Length: 119
Length: 320
Image 1 (tube, rainbow over the protein chains, first blue to last red):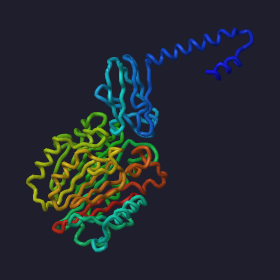
Image 2 (cartoon, chains in turn purple, red; image 1 turned 90 degrees about the horizontal axis):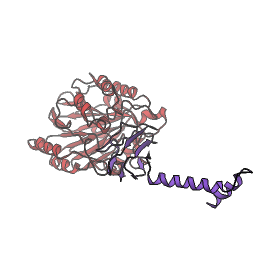
Image 3 (cartoon, chains in turn red, cyan; image 1 turned 90 degrees about the vertical axis):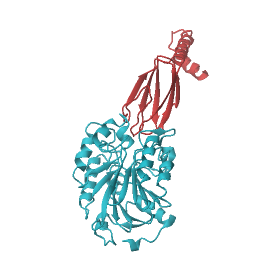
Image 4 (tube, rainbow over the protein chains, first blue to last red; image 1 turned 180 degrees about the vertical axis):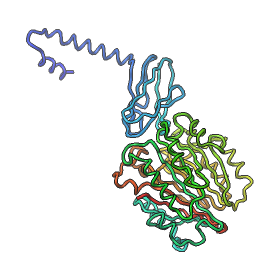
């Protein structure tokens, strides 16, 4: 935080009130906190044959997007949703409108598993 | 052939692994359940070599196993698996005597894309007089639970695609272990298939040579990558009384072997791309060997059976 303030002061143009800076910081912090509490969108990366994060908690109504960063086909498959085969950099999204714990796996490499907790 | 194959034991198996990774063909002969091997310059050399009682005519036969053709794969180290399958087919057509039939141990296609199964069926059509017996790999069934595969290749099978048949005194069993998965990603045969297998074997004499073929290994090659079948021990328990059991599989794209009593287990090369040795790297993806060297890691397997003496001569041969 100290470093951020110092940079902010250095970045100030002559004539702009120093009161603006804390105000902007406060608004940005509030926005970030709001996103953390209610992420309408979240992302899971697939790399090195693992889902990252392995367990993700999102609120009801969130959309989760999986992005395959491996140089190998993967799927995102559970009873509630299933993706087609995702090649490198391809993605799949699912909208969670019901609370619950959704365990999923890659249908091609079923040793790869992940969990979405919707609450 | 057999007189050169007396060596055995761990050192021989280690040698075989090394030679497989060096891309050298191997001859494996099974006699009384004990398997041994010797290196070969190539499959044609094996076909032309003097044989002791093998060769497929006068009370014996040959079949060929191919695996993991992965039609639709289009990345390094092999952007054209159709071409390497065609090269494999050319090797099969050059065999003398010709194989009676082919066995394909799964992953016909890479991603079940439209036309993939058509390509496999067209390329393999007419290669052997007895046709090709298939089992599915997970790449063939992940999108639709095996519906398209079964409609296309499941004729004459039961359940999810398993079957048995007899050929010149040898009992063949094709098992499916890619449609159910145990926690941890291990393959599964499932209770229905196991029940069928027990009944299938019940009437057979213990002296009947048995060949089992499936996609995922029936032994624990590397469980962390799913390279094993969770309920394989039950199946192997039914097979335990037989004097000669040969288990062939694909899935891991490399030749490994294990001997357990009267049972021998053989994993096969792919015709499309190699995979890492068990546990080497983050996961079981394509092994990025230089493109110009990939044929040293791809290949097929010829198996010759001679009636009476019960040897199964197994030749693994690379494309380059």
